[in-house]
Length: 326
Image 1: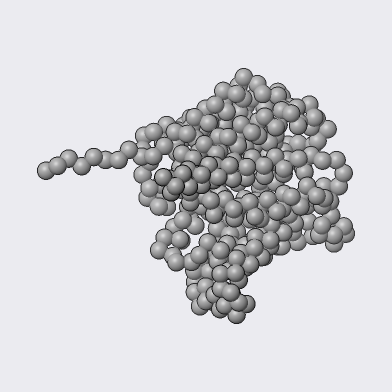
Image 2: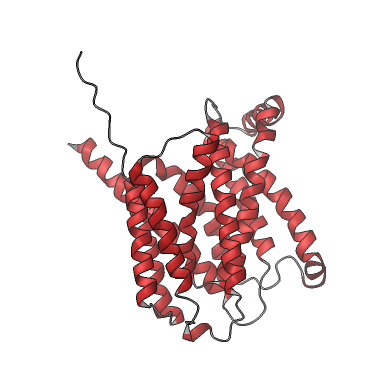
């Protein structure tokens, strides 16, 4: 009985963590991108998040190995000796950095609720890449769910043509740029996730070592992005220009929130993940209304309902094929 209760508690904990991460990060980024005053550079925030993530993983492995020499030996083996696997990780790492930068662009130009709903298109891109790269088969219910998802997101986007939040009227936004950014982010997320899954099949590398490689490449590629996109601004105003407590909160959420989700996600089945996503969308909508005066139209509500239904349908387990006795 105690084991069963423990499993249920872990499931509820994973639900809370997943919902909190999904909703809070988006709302926090949106809040920091609508604050008055000097705006921080999104490219530097991405680099710092990757750096903190890498340091956290080093700390975990150091604790596991019990010594600095053990840490160095472990990292050396999986980075230098097994260099081919380490190089292969560069592809999803680069895509994740691009995805994170695109998210900042999208959230800066879209309402938090609209972004949260539209970003669920990553389910569709992941499914499509899974079919082509991993040869996965989707059942009829999942294809129907993807169609509902597309129509729902389309309705949400069309509902924004004539509406704007009352409290972000003075914030310069480009909804079309935001839409393009979120679509590219979904494609990047889908391909990176499927490619990563393909790499990990048969791999014995730990979660922490895997994230060290991802974050290491992320820092290098992210720094190149800082130089390329914001080099002049950084040289004039500094790397941490525009940073405040809220921005540091976003950086830490990106760094440690993702690792926390990676730890608890093994206790969550697909239905629980889908439920957490649905809760995060609802939370984002509610907070968007109260914080930014977001207007929920009938068309937005119907589109969101279709997306929530699609997420639930897609996460349902596949029916097991019954084998008839000979």
